[in-house]
Length: 310
Length: 298
Image (cartoon, rainbow over all chains, first blue to last red; front, side, top):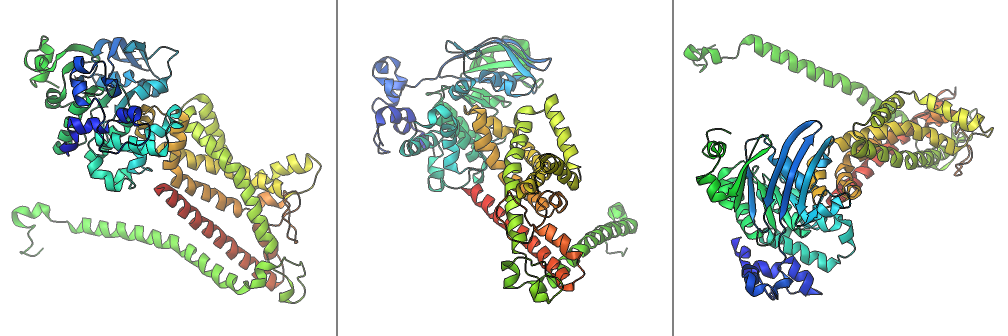
């Protein structure tokens, strides 16, 4: 359903615009003021477009090291994920790509015995600072996993609502109406609304693989994060479903910063503004995607992207 | 092998050898025989229970207390009302104690304790507890709460003994089920910015519910059928008593006393009581399954 992916309609359903300008319930078709054009034209929209100019935030890794017990999996990486850009991380299996992104929203520390060192700056906030609430970090930095994992006990609707309900501080603030409009907005953002509108009550696990993954994306969008980390989001999907997700990523970056780990170099080339190449826990090279694939400065990058190894 | 067989000539190596065919038949036969042998006692049990038990069932069987009057007519011995109510009440209290503590322990073991030394110590003691004979639990409560306090038998003391018996079963079964919940589920909830306790209550527990219900039912069924922990904690009585602070009758104890009686009618009452117990547990099973299925869809 690319039709609902057009900027105008997306802006229309933008959860932020609803929350801010909505007060009560906005008729689904009432266009929000200051829509996509404002977002694209920075200068024109800068003053008035606060309504839905919800922008992604940049993430900066400073000397990030990640450990599993004693084993160092990420060996001191400095890397910048620019706001509202898609950054792809490529590299052979086991090079630490997934570990790296899991450090960004502090999911790495959930693994027993694992810890991280260095700094991860969300804009100007160090997410590893002891005064920072890890729960709030994860609300700001969403994550989509390799395998679609909708909550098996929940319906399509509840899966999307789960993020809002589960995050305790946001909980009381959500009325029923508000919840419905937010869920709808998130599903529209994920390009899933038209496919599931008439079966919101059915189990989320009953959808197809590609739909499940978009459901998971909608679920993380519902919390209105500034950054979304995607850990090989398409590796369990067929090419058509993959294409849908890639189109979606292109649409989403207007709103959030996206980091995507991928094994698929064509995918990196298609969706990413910038690409980082990792090898054995170290960052070999990062740059505009075009450059990494056509004119890399490091011979190891060239070997990898041309298929000489990995 | 006939000449028409496709697995002949140059394809002869694809032919099934007679020896393998024979071995396959023997193996299948053995497994089938094992299944049938296992089913025989079960079928006989149900058959005898129904045949002997149904005979003593009557409306008054469920609505009167045993009279203790065993040397007169069969009609004067009374029913098992006090035993049914006593079992229901004591098992309900035991469940109310053992299920929350047991599931709480399992959640702690899986979600927080993980592989810490204390968690492993807890697991070890739970395993030891699983292997303790039921009469030992009865003895323990007897020494602590009957002899120790110098007071008399009481229904709640029976419940405590049953709760001790149920606890390891509930913990172990719930732990196994919780371990089956994929970590990906916990991670995706955590990554949404859910605090850990909400992940456990809203995601992990509902997903594990049907499995945990099965484990809890096993524990309840085991407790409901135990005589030993009740003999010298709740003792036995004839009158219906709903006060957990006093002597309380129960189905297993009633059965135990009845089968040792020389009077045929009283032994038959034991059969009736046994059938009642089995059907009560069956009903509980059905209800719990319906409830957990419904809540899964909601």
